[in-house]
Structure formats: structure tokens, C-alpha cells
Image (cartoon, rainbow, N blue to C red; front, side, top):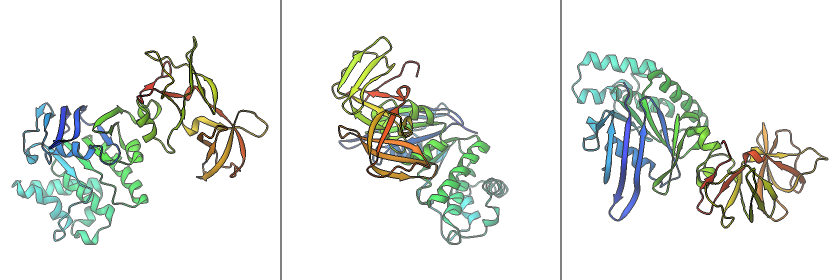
Length: 365
């Protein structure tokens, strides 16, 4: 069973300090939604308010059409998986998974059925008699998830559950979580500051910054069509290049944009209002900047750092005016520090941000 979650004009204050300001969001039944943002943006606080571990200052939270922000945590129909696993060390895996069901006095046969089913789903049946000290970090995380599954909740809430795992184990556990969501079809809300987790797991990403929601969209929507300069810089590795704009011209096809290092570039951006060059920036991702073969002429880039990643090479360089730019070359690139390269930008992949950091779209994008 899964349920929608409706967050309506929610604000959270601690005294005079506002940590969330008028947040509204609807999570559809069965959807996997990730709250993503830097430390201190309020994402964990929002998750804890859904769970009932934090009070709502203003606004309402509903699950499946029923208001829950006035209910105690145990009556909200949600189950939370914590970063720290929070397993009882003196109990076996089976006892840890059964404990919450025993507290609500569920019949023993039903408890055993749910524990066995969850263990089978997570492939931890062979661990049921072990205690947490005999488990790896990944196994402990599975037990914590199993403890949530046996509650048969309307929604699962995950608070940075992978942050204690090493890189290889995080990758495997991400895959297992995606498979678990496909099998259960449950509503899942996941908090992380790791964009890779967000991009690989989410149906939709909620990007949070400075107490508010910056953008909501599918992983590729927020990557290809960032709504703000913050989103453009936060999503993607390496971060998007930003170049100060020195002049704007208006053509029939769209704005022409001038920068000191790149010259004048024709775009098909059609802003909704008169666009000023003051404080505006041009954005482009490294993969949209081609390093040209020897003999071809483009824009000059002096190499300052080369990062070889196997399948690709990242070239960090400087334009003639000193502006920094990152370009992506083939994995077999022989570029070295001090080399003078020629590059070409994909004009269809340009992003333009006004002085307030708001993105202006390419026509039809």
C-alpha cells in the first residue's frame, strides 16, 4: 500500500530562526522523491516533520488525503530509516525487525510472516539469528530497512541512509534500493546531499536551498533545464561553467551574448522580459565544449590542470581574458599543462542567468 504526501505552506521556526519558509509539495503514491541540497538547507528537518519527529510551525502535512501533522509519529503510517541504523545490539536481526510489531501487540504468527517476507525481499534470511555486531555496514542497513518494511507503511522515509557506507557499498546499496522500490511500489522519500544518489534513485528531485525549494523535476530536467544558477552549479560534476556577460544584443533568432573571453555568441534564447547584461552570466557544461583536433581553429584555451578519468578527460583552463573554463576531451587526450588548445561551444546548450540567478530558456527547451 502506498499513499500520496501533501505538504501545504509549511514553515518551521526555532524561535526567531526560520529554517523552512512556506514549503509546498505533493508526492504522488508510489513515487520515489529525493530531497537534495547542501547541509543546512532544511531537507532533513522537512523529512522529520513528515515523520512527526519535528513539529510544524505553520501549514499542514497530509498522507493519503488525511491530515497527519497533528498525529503522533506512530499513527502517521510512515516508517523511517536513519543514517545511524539504530539497531538494538543485544537483539538478533529477527528480534530487531519484530520489536516494533511486538510493541503494538500484533499476533505472533503475523509478526513471523512479516519478518520472513521482509527477510526474503532483502535477501537477509540467513542473518536472522545474528546480532548487529556480527554484520557488515551494508547488512545493518538492510536490517534497518527490513524493520521499516515489516510495518507495511504508507510511505518510507530515508534520512541519508547510505552516508556511513564506503563508496563501493554505497553503489551496490543504491541499486538494491532502486530494485526494492520497483518490487514494493511504495512511496519513498529520501534525503541526501549526494547528487549521484539523487540522480540514480529519484523519480523526481526536490532541490532545496536557503530555506526554500529551488526546483522540482526529474533528474534530467534539473540537469538539462536548471531553473536557477544555484541548481545549475549544484547539479553536475564538474559544475557548470559560468562566464560574466558584458553585453546583450537582440536578434530575430534570439539574444546575442557577449563575454570578454568568448566573444559574441548567437543564441535562440527568447527572454520573457527585457534582459539586462548587468550581473548576468552565461552557463555551459563541460561536455558541451569540444576540444578541437589539431589544425582546427576555435576559441583559445590555455591548459592549467588535466584530470584523467579513463573514459573522459577534463581540461581546466583559462581563456585569453583570464576567465576559467572546464572542457571535456576524449579519454585518450594527450593534453598537458601549458598546452594551447582550441575549443568550440555548442550554442544550443547555452544557459543564460539574469542578475537574480533566474534561468532564461532556449526556445523550445
